[in-house]
Length: 186
Image (cartoon, rainbow, N blue to C red; front, top):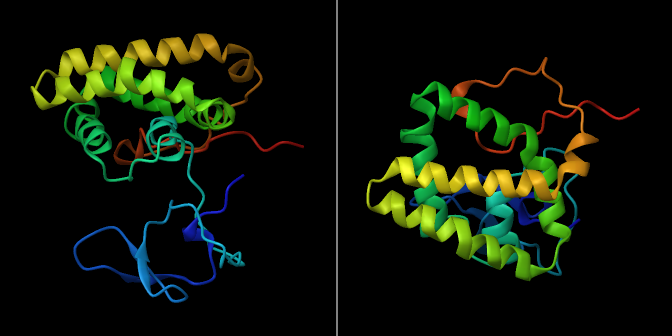
């Protein structure tokens, strides 16, 4: 598992930059994103650290392909989530499913060769983003669903071995972010 700036002792969550989503690193004197890979000065924070939640789309785009967390593709997909999917029962079901399978698929993608992330980016994420820019949310959702179906089929064994804790209720506003709801292992 990689170390992230958000887990570093020098990362100050009380000093957020005025115009963005970055926070101040007191060691490098620079603003950094929580999910940026840490530098050689990293010292693990004792508590309240940041770990990516399991959003496999962010894993593909940021972790594997090196885009920033606020790149156009992720902004467009987040717009779809916030302004389209959360407003329909089918969309809410898609977001709920994303939260259930996201952490497992994210881990598999993280461990896979980069070419797999590049293929998913070109086959699904870029086309979905393009449809969103054209306000064709139905087509963007269809592309997204096709990606989910491919990933579910590919990682069916890992998903079958996962137990979801359905007692953890997630508010609609927090759905679709790959929140971890797995039952604790004994």
